[in-house]
Amino acid sequence: MVDERIIICLKWGSLYSVDYVNVLYSACQKAMKGDFRFVCLTDTDDDLSAGIERLDIPEIGLSSEEWYTKGVWPKLALYVKNLHSLKGRCLFVDLDMVVLGGLDEMFDYGSGFVCTDMGNGWRPGGRLGATKEPGTCIFSFDIGKESQILEAFHKDKAGAKRNFINEQDFAGAYANGVDFWPEGWILSFKRHLRQPIGKDLFFSPKAPPANAKIIAFHGDPRPYNLIQRNTGFWDNLPHLGNGQVKWMHDYWVSNGGRVF
Image (cartoon, rainbow, N blue to C red; front, top):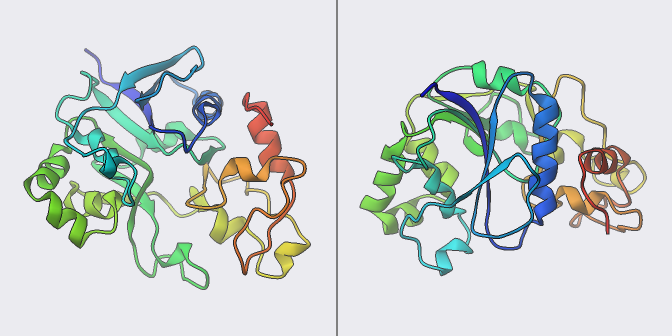
């Protein structure tokens, strides 16, 4: 079997509507020039768009409580030795990512475990490149070749949860050959596009620059919070972001997302 290029997302529970999966798939279709498969690992029976492959989330021994506590530990299911017999290079994308273009380059970039740098450059006042912290909101790896991450978790689950804030910190510590995306490919909505405190009351977030491939929405607000016409304040004090963000609305609707 020829190795393939596979985009994978994860959906469990009801935090994200099915529109997040369908919008992501549509945006990835526009952002890819070559062939690829789009897989949604899920425990729901939502109405996914034609072309999305629905597969079960592998069982990795988490309690029902652990699925919904802080840490996003179910994402470690990506590292089972045999992930539904999938073979090839995986680009994992969280559901609250805004995909703009150029994903082919992300499959071609680097080897091993390539991830987002969520260090100081993503924090207010932080300097890009000052520190590097692995982030798994958008990362690539060879399917089946990072099973040591899950094995380490199973060996000492209590220690993993005690010593690491979340799955991405844990995965970064045990992954093979961690590398990071080039600067500018992945931008943080909060860090790079949201207006400064005070100014955000009067001015909408900046539109993404042309060279950005993905805008990451980590935590609140989430993309859907920005698209409704009468959305009101969508940010958390002292931030004062409010009102519909046109570029986010247009992205959502143009990719088949519904607005309620």
